[in-house]
Picture 1 (cartoon, one colour):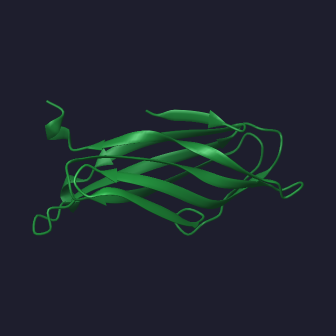
Picture 2 (cartoon, helix red, strand yellow):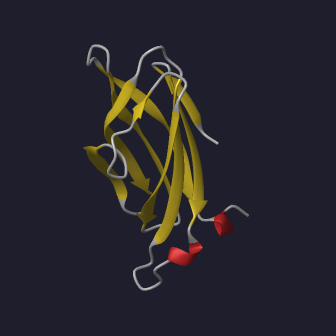
Length: 128
C-alpha cells in the first residue's frame, strides 16, 4: 500500500483491478483506487482541489485537475480521516498515477499541497 505523509496529512492508497468492468470492444482496463486522507496536524483542513498525472504505457500521460474528490470537498478536524473510492480506465495493461491535493487550513485560509504517492495500475495476470 503506497503511503505518503506531507504537511501533516497522511495519504494511503489501495488499488483494485475491476475485471467485471472490462470493455472488450474498446480494450479498456478498469482500475479502482481507494484513498484515505488522514489529518495528523493541529488545524482543521479542507480539500479544495486535486491534480492527477495518469500514465498509460500505450497512451502516455494525461493530466486531470478538478475541484474536490468525487464531488465533495471534505473538511477534516485534527485526527479525522476521509476515505473515498474512484476509478481510472487505461488503454493498456500497465500504468500508474500520482499527484497532489490542494488543501486549505480553515483557521487562516492558507493553502498547501499534499502529495499523493505514486501507485501502480497493473492487470493481475501480467504480474506472473
